[in-house]
Image 1 (cartoon, rainbow, N blue to C red):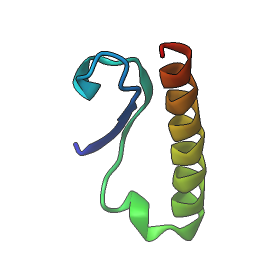
Image 2 (image 1 turned 30 degrees about the vertical axis):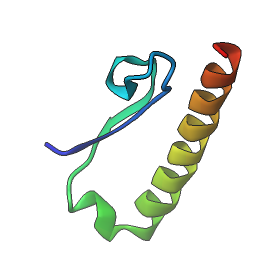
Image 3 (image 1 turned 30 degrees about the horizontal axis):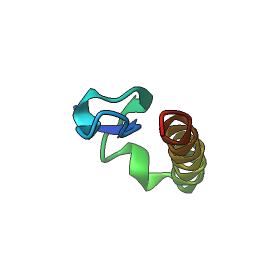
Length: 58
């Protein structure tokens, strides 16, 4: 199943950084506007969390 992964890039290799979001989704999930809105909200939180982790490791 497809998945979305957001990681903090603290090692120079984003595939090795801490994961702030890992979510499996299906195309059917994206048919719901409610799901879409909540997914974007979770993505925003994960991106902000990853950015904070990166700043703490600078």
